[in-house]
Length: 361
Image 1 (cartoon, rainbow, N blue to C red):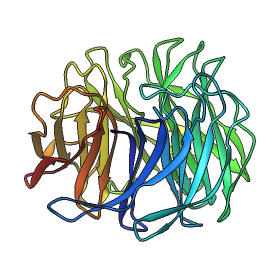
Image 2: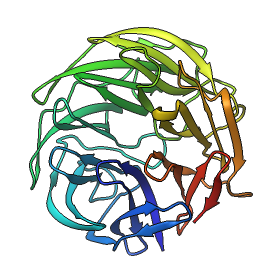
Image 3: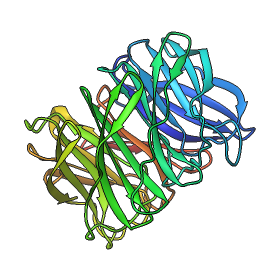
């Protein structure tokens, strides 16, 4: 049996990648494509190492054409590790591995997942990770070669008032690095921004999103740089209020200065979603996708000015009676489907296109 923990879309090679773990503890990575009626999968790459995979992350390093996994090799506390793979068709070959952090981490499949993005401007992978004791997040950046990654120093602690940080989301645009997080210490969501010189971070002041949004969900944190709205340096971060309704808080960046904008509720996905939402973004069609983590109702809609689903909206129950936690989601622009994975054993892969397909595999 195979449990899946992350799914990403890699537009440079027109494929999806999934990261999983077998019942014997070995990690598995597989590449696939969606052909309009189903999936075509390549040969699984089996990593003989074992360890924690809940909350692990995949990221594509475009400048060296390598797939990178970020995970732990031990249970309990330990540093973050990476594996690097070259791709030929749908086959993977290991090209490098090593340690990412000097700090021990406390990643989990809920609330404190690893986050990572590739920055074309910096030509580095930027990783957000949950540091163990004190409980906060930090970032670290890695310079890439074909056979390995050279990691810089960890950033300063990212946290609000008191320990405990969850729902970390990150996005990049040019030299800008935007992030959001939930602070357990003072029960608030925050936004932040950073710059990067080499592999050294400079982090600006954090901006609280106020007392109206005070629910820490269990899903991955989602931050998007918005390219469809016509507003420069426009971002949106997914949050929830005390009623467990879903919202996106919009803002703009100038350097590390944050200017708050509209906070807009999801049109279809609202009310009593204790485990949060997973999202996908289709900028070419102004479309936001979402799925509740406590059922398999997928929704989508458009808005030309914001990340919102209040126009041309559609909702489908993709899998009736399924209440398994959703671990990860992404929009596949090559297949034209919103794809997400549950926490069953073995894991299901679901895919949805508005008014076209709503199946699971």
